[in-house]
Image (cartoon, rainbow, N blue to C red; front, side):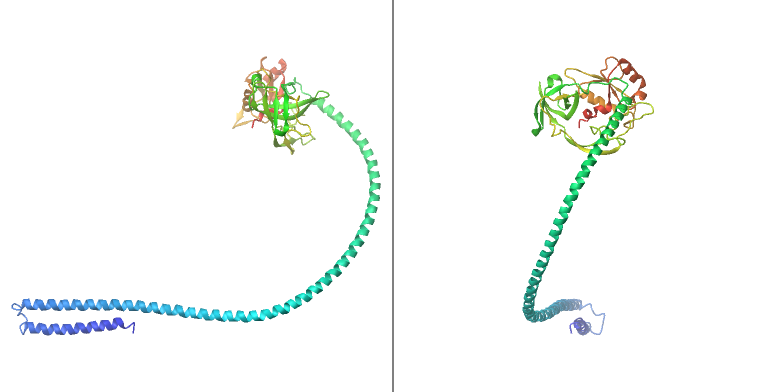
Length: 432
C-alpha cells in the first residue's frame, strides 16, 4: 500500500485533469457558441473564466505537491518505525541469550560447589601424605649428609698431609728458582748495560729535565690543593704545568705527579694535581712501558740514525690513572720543574727537523707539529728562532732531525747546544 501511493496520486491527478478539461471545454462552448471566432464581444468574460480555471488548476497542483510531501514524510516515519522494531527484536534476542547463559552459569556454579567440596577432601588427604613423605626424605637426607661430612673430614685430613708434603717440595723449588733467577738477572743486567752503552746519545744532553725551578710549600692531597714557591713575580701564569718530583739517595729523580697552576698569586701559586685515565704505550720487543701516554717511540732507538729508525710503541697499551700515587703522596719540600720555564729567565729554542706540512700533516713530527710546540713555548714566555746560533738555549729535536735538518743539527752539535727530544716534552705540551 505504501509503494502504490504515488501511483494512486498520479491516477487521481489524471482524473482531476480530465474532469477539469471537460468542464473547461463545456464552459468554452457556452462562451464561444457555434462561431469559434466569436470572441470579440465576449473576450473579457472569457479571459476571466480562463484565469479562474488557471488559478483552480494551480491550486490543485499545490494540493497535489502537499499530498506528495506528506506521502514522503509518512515513508520516512514508517521506515523509522521498522528500524526501531528490528533493533528491539535484536535486543530481545540478546536478552534471551544472556538469560540462558546466566542460567547455565548458575547451574554450573551449583555443580562446581559440590566438586570443590570433594576436591578439598582430596587435598587434605594429599597434604597429609606429602608431610609424611617430606619427613621421610628429611631423615634420609640427614643420614646421607652425615655420611658425606665424615667422608669430607677424612679427605681433608688427607689433603692437609699432601699440602705439607707439597709445601716442602715448593720450598725446595723456590730455592732452586732463586738461584736460577739471580743467575738470569745478572745476565739481563749485563745485557742492559751493553744496550745502554750502544744506544748512548752522541750529542750533549740537556739537564733542564732535572733542574729544580721551585718547591712545594703546602700539600693538601685530600682537597687536591698544592701550593708552590713560585708566583707572578717569577713569571708564573694560570695554566702553567709543572712536574713534581723528589730526589732519593743516589741522586735518583722520582716522579710524583703533574701539577697545573689554577691561581697564580704574587709570590706563590695554588696548583691542582692533573688526574685522568690514560693508556701507557708499551714496547713490543721488551717490557718497557712509557711513563706518559704521549710517548709513541721507544727511547732505546735514537732518532735520525741511518738504518736504525724509531721503534714505535705498538704493543697493547697498559691502562693507568695519571695522577698522584697515594702510597707516595706529594709532601712539603718536594721539587717542581718545567723544561720551558725558569724563574726570571726567557729561553730561546730551535725546533730541528723537517717542518714541511702537507695537508695538515707534518711527516717530521713524532707526535706534535712544530707550530703546536712553538705555541706552547710562547705560552711559557719562550721564543722560537729559525736558525741555530749561540743565543739558542735548547734544541728540540723531532723525528730524523739528523737527516732531515742535517745542517742546522750539525751546527747545534758543533756549538755544544743541549738537545731535548720531542718525546721528552709530551707531558708539558698537552694543555687540554
